[in-house]
Image (tube, rainbow, N blue to C red; front, side):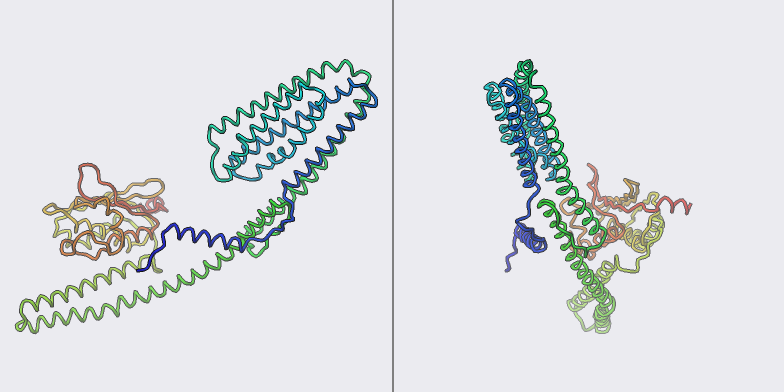
Length: 535
């Protein structure tokens, strides 16, 4: 016996194979390519250094022109500015983390990493500026502690959870909000104390007004220059590479699968472009595989048609001969055969006829969906009437009552639909209760853009455990001597309904009732218009 691998192992194997294909088709990115985070980190570090240098130059300039009081005042003004920078950095980090947790898009982390890169410079500048002020140093320590607590309690766990596809737990969100509110309160206390120190020193700054204005102008120019440089850098590092990436993706999406995606820009954008290029290559491989499978499907269909021909001619001819000669044997040599011999002949004839029935049913099953089906408006009332006519003998023998409510006109194949109704009627008549005449009713109602039909009878019913099995070909729930048939009727019904774009199932019977209710759906395409035209 051959051991069958478990489903989990098969899934893991397919996943590993897909990963190998992805790794093989994905372009390689040079490790020397700088990432956007690294570029922004260096840019903010340089900006921090420039601002620190400007602060030092600002202090040195004041030292040569004003006394120590003026120097203290000029420490407080930049301190308030860097406090604002620190506040903005933390707000950007909080916005980036929240956006990434909601969307799982790494681009939302850009403000977080930008703020994270600027934060040490801002804190360092603040520590330098407020060094002579013990109270402000204590306030800043509280601000930094609150910021670090927010990073540890919320920011880092939230990013890790989002990377794993998970949501941030509510207690963690609450703790993060409390930490961030604590940071704001600590920063407000710092700003309040710094403002108080500044107000006290304003009266001592009259002699240094001109120098302060000059230094402030220089810092403003530096800020403007920094903004211009930052705009140029962001345009070169982000906007232009993303626009190029968008054009490349649009070219591939428009159908030009032979267009190779160009890898340009920071490492993050190059990785995205590499993923798009890998998808393009895999799509080409998939299209080749689909083309191969389509040709295989055409070959399989041709073989099926050949089988249908053999089944309808070559296989049935020997069976007809077997049945015919067995019957001739029974007729010609009846006086020479005992009861057991005649019984054996009857078995042979019955087996040949049942084999012919199986072949005919299998042939009918295989022909559903084959080329040659004619879809046109079909009045299901006429279809149901034709099905009743075909089963007239069975209806009379069983004293069955068939009720057909008003049915719609649909677009479909008339022959297949007659077969559908006839099979359902025949099933209800065959599986009837003893000494209870069959009562069968067909109904229809429009539901959600499609027609829902029902065939309800008062027969022996179907157990819930077998309500899906009855639609499997050649599946029988009862012995052949109790209920004759090949076990293909409901399987053929499902194939006909699927071919028409619907679905079929066994409905739960209402409490206290007996019998079976089989429901199926068919699209309402052109139904109302066809009914109006035929009225």
